[in-house]
Image (cartoon, rainbow, N blue to C red; front, side):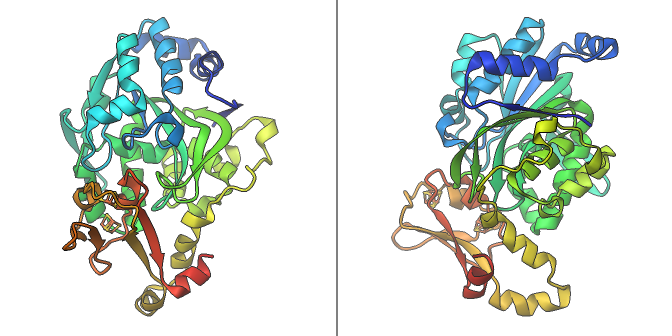
Length: 375
Ligand code: SF4
Ligand code: SF4
């Protein structure tokens, strides 16, 4: 399975258009026939919240513009949208993320997946609600952002598909699948359902994020733009470039398996064969998961007494209330001063509050043992 990687230092439309054309260009007559047959494309960016492009939380609008231009030049109809996390105002998201501007300049349709109709799919014991948009369109182009993730360690193309779950139903699934591994299996199930609709996957890693991603980490200029027909192969290679081992990203094994892709058969440009990005902070999101992986069930109660961590609201809080509304188990309540407070006994560590806080005001409290291990 081929993964294309381009080194691009900054967001420059012409350079991005060249890369997009290379990624999406049909490689043979059969591919050309397939591409010609497809009329309506849905672009699925990462629009986690109302962040400007410089925050490196969401897919950069120039990357989206390059893809939009390619599709329009090839006489395709273009729909684009997402269902941002929590209770975030979608209009504000479109404004801040550059979608409004794109819709004013190009004949594209913005779709709010939080309110668009959805379908419930039964798949291997799961009942998953997914936006109907992937069936309204004939093909999906999935364009993720290159970031660490406080729950899944890494977020790329596979995790980006979680935005196809409409609105607050995402919170229900966090409640239903609270553990990291349960949640990862559910993400893989979503990938298996959506996969036949995907035409191509890309990861915008020109600016990306390490440390406490996916929204409160460090903005990094990784200078990478990547693409593949397989989201699992793309995530395998992208997470490896950050320094992750395959077992450190909990959905990767299953996602690769569902694609029938062997990691050793992922084909990348020769110059990236032994390349790992320097000084990427992955330990902030990685080590707790490593530790818990080796804890046998019987010992987890005892270990849990010493090794624990949970989100805590800092004095940077602006009292916007987004974390309170986003918590799937109502573990955050207001104190007498109107400041949200996390109840660690109720918290299921889904990290939605940490992910959704627009002011990066939620820190992670670690017990002394956790601090020692996660240093
Ligand atoms: S912690 Fe963040 S999300 Fe929660 S109320 Fe404060 S600023 Fe808003
Ligand atoms: S407090 Fe935060 S991490 Fe805990 S369950 Fe609520 S949203 Fe998830």
